[in-house]
Every structure is written in C-alpha cells, then in structure tokens.
Length: 204
Image (spheres, one colour):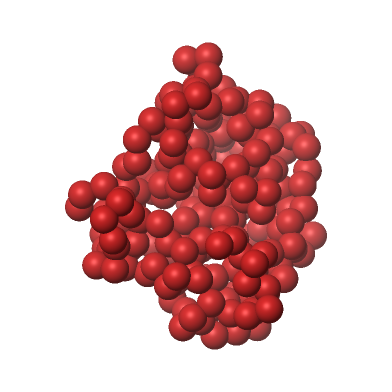
C-alpha cells in the first residue's frame, strides 16, 4: 500500500509530527567541489555502459517538483514538504536499466549506500532533490543532491548522492547491513532487521 493510500491517516505508526527539520547523519559533512563532482549510473544498464553527468549537466536536467511527506526512522515526520530536483524516473529514462534489473543501490559520499526495489525507485514521488521549499538544500541536509523516497523511511534516501547502481539481485546497503530493515516501509513500521519476514531481504 502506497503513501497516497494512507493520506487520511496522516502519520505512520510510532511517528510524531515535527515542525522543523532536524539534521541527522552519520559521519562528517562532505565538502562540495563542483569541478570534481559527477553523478554516475552504472551496473546492469540497458546498453552495458555507464552514464555520467557533471554538476552543470545534472542541474540542467528537467526540474521536477513533488509534494510529499518525510518519515524518519528516529520517529519524526514532516507533512506536505515541497521537494524540487530530478525525478528518479527521469534518470532511469536517460540511463535505462537492463530488463532483468530488480533493485538499485544508491551511492553517496564516503561510500555510503542504500538499496531499493526498482519499483520504489521508479515511483512518481521518488526524486533526486536539490531543493526543499524552493530553496537549495543546505550542506547539512545533503547539498547538492539527496534522494527522497517518500513511501519509505528517510534513511532509504541518502544525502550527498553520487550515483545509482542497477542490480539484478538485492544487496543490503550501509544501514541495512547494520540492523535496519531491508525494505523500510513506515506504514508497516519496518524499522529493524529483526522484524524482517522471509523474502524481505538477503541473509544478514
């Protein structure tokens, strides 16, 4: 069941409404260097090659806006946030996956990663956000690009994203290897790996 089907409920179980936007991340804030920045799509691509955009090229991709909620596994939620940036589906159209791709790994600075089912990645609400509320993201919140996946807990949308790897089988990302649920659906309160059921993810 998707987020839009829960709109009448407002908040997923165990969540509380947050007025501000707390800063939560692991490790230091990376320093952005425009001349060295590249966004890459690689792995099981349709043509077997990789596609890359520098910061100027990525910023010139079609701008998309999404109004969606934001649910952090630390139990705060923000409702009806305006995100602007590049739709994940746009990236997939410009650099399509091979037919047998089932999952993606989203890679960020310092080797941080988060795995997603391809269907979650291609959802209309999934966006590589460069702006929030019409303003560019701050460094602490992921500038220049963070992934936002409104239908899942926010850790599934890394800050400081640098690329996407298409995969033909699931593989756990950074937090998924460290005890977080492989799927991360807030409406099913899938917070931790001990809650997983058979088929929810690869063996730990």
